[in-house]
Image (cartoon, rainbow, N blue to C red; front, side):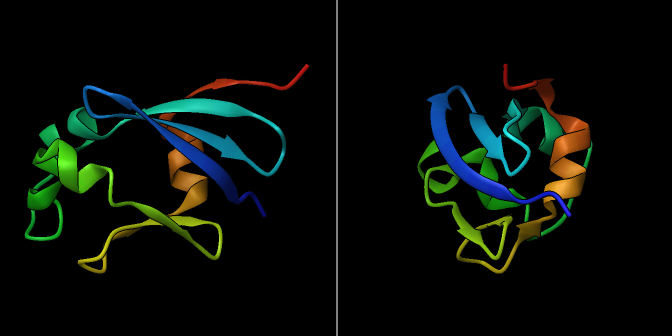
Length: 83
């Protein structure tokens, strides 16, 4: 089972994620939210809110209860495998 170990906010709605298999990927939060709607996603339009993310048991979460699964994020990211 893949997990998120670390993240870094890069700016412009993008997070760099480090996964448990050593891969790293860029997740564009704003691009993701542009094709989805809902009350939990609305706060992610704010850069300051994106920065409030945290890792909860290997998933990416926010204070409003939104959690994105590491498996789905792995699929959505442009993955760079560890050397």
